[in-house]
Image (tube, rainbow, N blue to C red; front, side, top):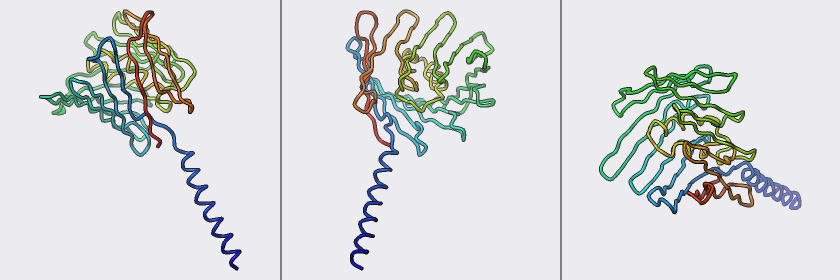
Length: 254
């Protein structure tokens, strides 16, 4: 009887540890923090912190600079599409809330509305999706037009605003956010916030590893460093002659 009891106890212990091991195996590494530094322009140094919801989607990310912080609260619909991003810019003396509201038709972006903290819409842009070319055309019906082309992995490969054309190239390796498939609203939020680095922030939300960004006046090449778990721990951006800025990445298991 004692032998049988001991066997049952050992089986229970084995099952417990086996269950814990399986739970650990199911956990994945998610980006927790990115520290971006530039030796050429120290004022551009920034830290980006990420918070996730119960479905492991980005719930908030906050960019902190020497001049203040910019917080982005993200709201999704039941299909996982971003329907609203509340952007709060805070400095030493002011705090400003801007809401970016996204509407969809058959799962494709159809409208962007930008509202102030009182809820009044100050700007809107209609979007049409060209399935054959996998691209969006945005028109504010006041002469301002943009074009966003996607690749087969739903990463943004080209962003055209008037005569300005940015081209992003990716390789086959997984990116920082391998589960992200909805980065158009993220790009538009940064772009319409008049952030000069909006194109360079694209790689933060790309599900494939970005290799280069060809912007208006320069081309930046990305070199990544990975750890023993094949996670990107550093990204260095350089032009043809020198390093421009680098990003150090840390993770958490979820």
